[in-house]
Image 1: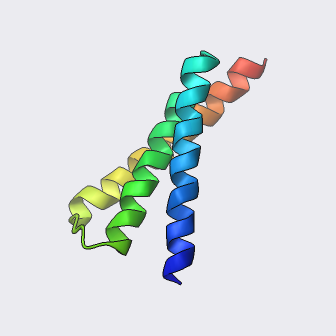
Image 2 (image 1 turned 30 degrees about the vertical axis):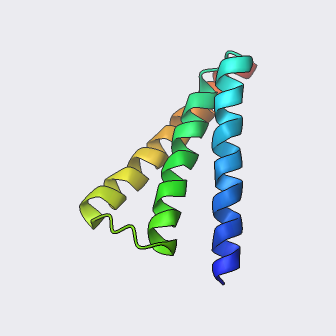
Amino acid sequence: MQILQLLSILLEVGVAKTGVDIAVKKNRKSGWGIALTFAIYVLYDLSKLVPLRFPDAVLYPGFFIATVSIFWATRQMLKESA
């Protein structure tokens, strides 16, 4: 199962980088929300894979920030496509 978690982390890194590319190269604000969300996912998943012990008081608010970030990003995408 560790291989699936590692593959997931690698894909999340790729999505975060793509978010930055969208923000910088395409000048789309939504890219920053995507990048932030998946960067937080990477940290969260890494904390489960390697001995990075983030307290729940950090992980849960971080996950909430990621959720708010992707919500904002999807709303931005909707506005940008109009």
